[in-house]
Picture 1 (cartoon, rainbow, N blue to C red):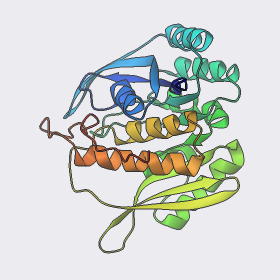
Picture 2: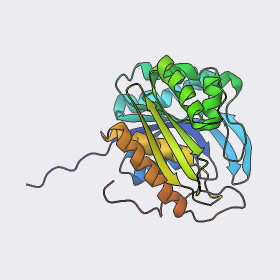
Picture 3: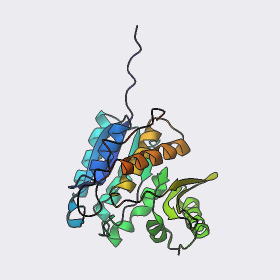
Picture 4: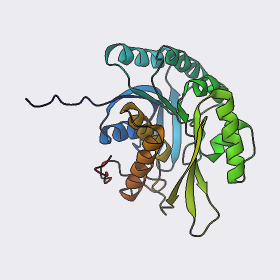
Length: 273
């Protein structure tokens, strides 16, 4: 008899909606689906944005964010969670409370503060509520600017990235993947640095010269969550996620006059994924 089909990992994306389709919930759904997962969503905010910037933001009430999480958890179940843009301080508090009831589910937290266009996506009050989310996360994926805010430390070198990341690891117990550091070597390398309670690892990549990079952080964090939900070890989930982001950058369709969306649908996926 044929073996039963393996069920896809159930991945919950908690994030804002991007009307331009390049980042946020839209990027999360595309990523999770392309990597073989079942995408579920808890939308925290609705944004009106295009490749040139964010025009308007409408936060979703915290009780509605919480309701979205609770109903999918109760009925479908959750194998991993990705958290991105959080619409308000109240929503951050509600999400942290919901995670307490989902013990054992891996969480990847992308601490979104500013969009690729430079528009602010989180208030100082919301950022102040990030600590309980970091304490519950398996991994957080800040870029260097976000790491500077979260740690309260200056960052001008790889050593200083390490000091800031290790301080977060020590305080909250989560792993930190500091993304997007450009090494001073020639040709330039992009370095992502993983700091965990028992390990450190460098992930290297050549820079892809494109402005069509909207949604890289969302895509990476969703890809890593998809890997963790499928049972991959953390380092393997990161490697697969980084490879997928690169494939999406190379497949970008070139839409828009600014930072355009990546090519999730056309990305060439390594069959070993």
